[in-house]
Image 1 (cartoon, rainbow, N blue to C red):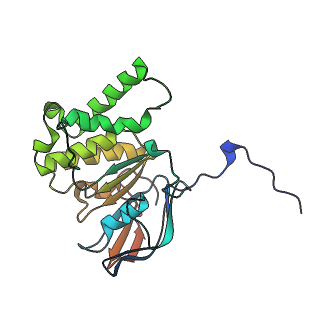
Image 2: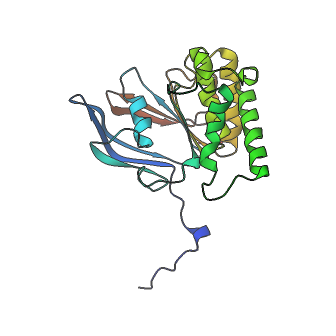
Image 3: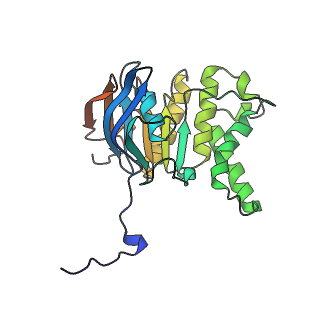
Length: 249
């Protein structure tokens, strides 16, 4: 048998954004996740559905290594979360704005923090880099309708407005993958439509989206796959046959 030739890097297979094998998360004596197997491929727009307490938020946190597994494994582009370093490729929208001490951050400062992972600590920022950062932040603020609130304290905004800040922070980072935990919760219809428009463009460009939601609303035409959880287990998984973008299932 002949040895297989070594493939050049450009020809090597690309790992999926997320893989989950036999994942269990145990909390307070019960399994919040119980034997989850999942693969999220590049270009997927995956909606994670299910009632409260089904394990939806725990699943996306497990994907990112934010909660420990009691069994099984998860990988991000082929690496365990603890060893993964290319965090600029991942944009995460949690359910609420983290509360921190010190001087309250403005909306613009919070959104600009989404650019941090794109800056190398081994070289100073160049002027063009700073210009690109400002432009990305401006675009993100405009997308979620917060340009007029850029100088306001983020923690003084309403819950829905804070959610729009978190969405803008992820958009500003221009990642390959977006993980969004209830991004439309408490967000008005106009902002939901703006988010749907932004994600339509990103998905059309091949970005990957993992979306936790109770009700997809205006995001529904973008969804290519659905995963329904119940009591920490996958109860149904399906592929959407067509989308508004005309992409094949």
